Amino acid sequence: MLFILFLTSLNAQISYQNVSNKKVSLGSYGRIGVDWSFENKGSIGRRLNLNNMGSIGGRLEEQDYLEIAPAFHFSPQNGDSTIISAQVRFAAYTHSLSSIGNSTTTSLGGLAFAIPELFVQARNILGKPLSIWVGARLYRGEDVHIADHFYFNDHSGQGFGIEYKNTRFATTFVASTDTTATLPPYFYLNIKSGTPSAALRQRTVYIAEHDLKLNEKNTLTFLGEFHHMEDADSDTEIENDTTNVILNFPSDKGYVVGIRHQLDLKKINPGSFNHFSLRYGTGIANGGDGGISKTSLTYGAPDTLSLSFKGAYSIALVNHFLLNFSEKYALNGYVILTKSKGAAESDHKAITYFGKEVFNRKLDFTVGVRNEFFINDYFHLLAELHYSQRKDGQNPAASMTKFSIAPIYVPTGKRDVWARPHLRFVASVARYNDFAKETMYSPYLEFTGPKQWGYYFGVKAEWWVWN
Image (cartoon, rainbow, N blue to C red; front, side):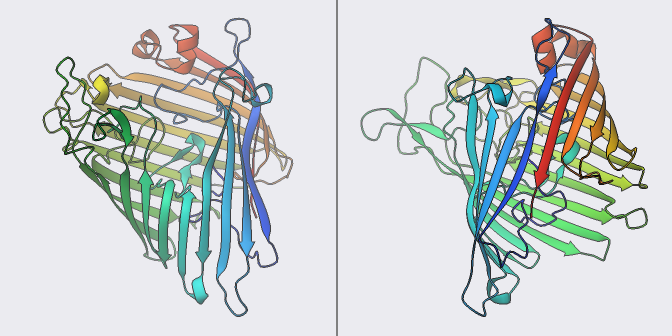
């Protein structure tokens, strides 16, 4: 989620500056509200976006969520300008669609807690532009806020890194205990002990980035990643004549290259920009689906002969802009295009690990704009229009066109698209094409059944705060 929208470097998302007189500082992000639809006598509102797209297509229907992020600051010895902090982040949300205030950890589909960040960082080491960090970190750059999509370089995970001037190196260690996943499985069958048991293997991701500042207005960022997974159990032969379930598998790898161009549009008004990025991932690094851009979330099925993802690929293109035209009007917009294919030969569905069948090819495209009208200091009006389209395998494309309007009270009285907190009334209407309607290809349609139109109403609050 979002704390700092303006960071171009991969620092912690809460920016702790000038903290020499503080031992503890605190940041927070949250959203909460109530929502409903006219279906089934005023039921809880369901997200109108297409399936497997997350908030891409508009985020005004997102459910309750809370983050609290304390940081602890340490003083170096006299004369040392090193900035030292330990960052923690706690997150809470509901598994079900119930509101966070009506849910507990014992409720059916109740509250979930997570610690997405727990790391120590030393910056400006001995007065040099050098930083070192170790731990679990939301290590990512900017996002398309109105689609809640952290694109291009979301390396969030547990690992360590070093940064010097405009260059960053990091290594993250990825493993999953989800035995239902269709990714290259982190589980494999181990019988070395004489008793078959599930064992866990790990993916290692090596990351390099460099920012090249061309001039005052233009910056290029170059990205490279290498992913590697060891053999599951190369010395053990597993006989499985009764099914086609793949239990063990060889080592695998993947590569990512990318470039991002950041342009500050100083001729309009301060804060205006256009950011364009293009990223290509191959092998097990072809991830990025469900509204999440992480390359480690491998897409599709493996080749059934080599049991690898050699030949799999993904292309991700994002353009994000903000135009602050005046004190009365700002326009924020984006384009997101992702094309992915697994390593299996099929252009439709294919068998993956554990005998599961998944789509092996997909193309999704979304374009959206948010118009923000500053009626006065305290009252703003959002008007959003989004179009999303997704094609899984050889299925026809499912599409959605959505319009949202949200009057906002801004108690801080700031005419700024980033001003928070927001107190909003949200009304959205979506129209689905025939294929999306017939296959009920959205959370809303899964609840209501096949309909051409969808509706959503809510009263919502959103905030973020940092030092």
